[in-house]
Image 1 (cartoon, rainbow, N blue to C red):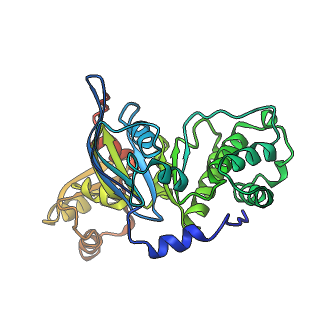
Image 2 (image 1 turned 180 degrees about the vertical axis):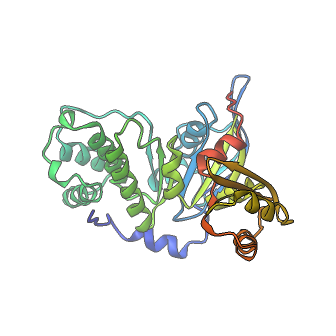
Length: 328
C-alpha cells in the first residue's frame, strides 16, 4: 500500500513532545452500583500501537469513550497529550480520532461527499478539503472507490471508510474500538497493514480487539483489564516472561529416548521430562534458564539431537492464564 500522510505534524510533534499520549490515574467509572472501571492507571506513550485487551464487559469501551470525551469519569484523572478530558474537552477532541465498534454511515452518499461533510464539520477550509479527502482515501486504500455509493461498499471497505473519517482532521491519537470486527481474513490483514502504516507516520493508536493473535504481532505494548481493573500493562514480551515460569522446550532425538530422558532428568535446570507423541516435552525449572543446556547434555551424552524448539506462549495463552473470564 502506497500511503501519503495527511500531514507531517503528528510525526514531528511525537518526536519532540515528551508528554505521554494518554495517561489515566485512578480512573473510576460507576453505573449506579456497578463499578465499570476500578482505579485504572495506565500510560500510553506517543507513537505506541497499544493493544487494549479484555473480555466483553471488562471496561475497554468505557475507557475509550471516556478518552473520547463521550463519558465523564466518576473519579480519577485522564489526560490526552497533557489535556484533561474533563477540563479541556474541546482541545482533546481536536487531537483524537475515535472509531466506535459500531458506527453509522450515510449509505446514500458518495464516498467523497461523506468525507467532505466531516471535513467541513472539522472546519477544514473548502479549498483544502479535496486534497485532504484524496490523501486519507489513499492512506486507507480507497482511492478507486471515491465516487462509489457507500451502501454499495463491502463491510471491509466501509470499515476503511470509517477509519478515513477518523483521519480527516489529522488527529495525533487514534482510539479504535474493534476496528476489525466482522471482517473476513483478507480485510483484517489489510486493516492491520493500514494501522502499521499509521504508526509509522507517527500516530499513537489504541486498539481494542478480541483477535489476540493479530494484536500479538501488531502491537508494541498492551494492557489487559478484567472487571475494570488493570491486570498487566507493558510490552507483549513482558507479559509472556511473567507467565513463563515452567518454560517448555520440545526435543526429538534419533532412537534411545529412554537414554535421552535420563540425561535430561539429571540436569538441575530441568524440572520435568515427558515423552509425548515421539517427542520429549522438557520443562525448565527457571524462566531465565538457558535452554542450550538441553542440547549440550544430549550431545555430550551421545544422543543424536534432531529437533529442539521452545514452546512460546501466545498472547491468547497469556490472556487465558491471567484472567478468570469475569465481567461486571
